[in-house]
Length: 260
Image 1 (cartoon, rainbow, N blue to C red):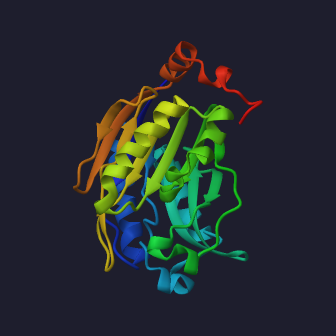
Image 2 (cartoon, helix red, strand yellow):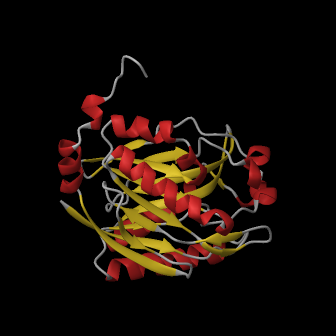
Image 3 (cartoon, helix red, strand yellow):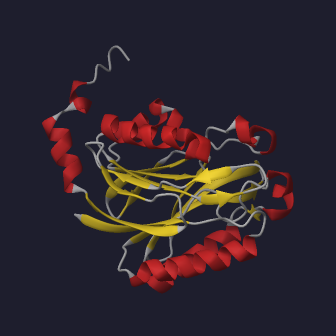
């Protein structure tokens, strides 16, 4: 099974959801014109890291954002890995991923588990309690947000559950973009799955972001790489390759669950 994916390596206008919604509307329309089956957005594409104003900017239960993405998906017959957005819930403010299928149905919601202290997330947000796993058109999948990829045991849990594709959305700072690339390749190799990772570009008042959106195959080889500019990054993945790699080197069968 092959899938064509469009990663939207966009700049994000700091603290201005209206402008960012308009940009995403255009990007999704453009992605659909390429014949992509799926579009992936970056982390906090709606507000950026304007955490001080999350009380004002965050969407209540991500309701309006979900409606927006659902309408886009249904209109263009395209699945949307909706990056992550600012959510204001009864449990507190969260950094939340939304996944909407081509019929406009919300099929997965995941709030970031690991909060990044260097960007003050722990001062403004609460960590999610969601499972990362979901199924997309019959394909076991999982979704993670930025800092999550520094915790290999969290991603391994999804691989053990059968995930063939791991989607990562991020606002990864440019000074550590080499870590981004290395970690993503390592997560793909050790879990024998595709890693589809979308990072933003541009800057906010406190940070510059590195781009370098990647699709990495189950051998750890880079299928496509986004560079540092705002662009749509296209890639095709072949899901049969996951099964081939896992059969050739059966790490999940050989795991010593009695020891770790």
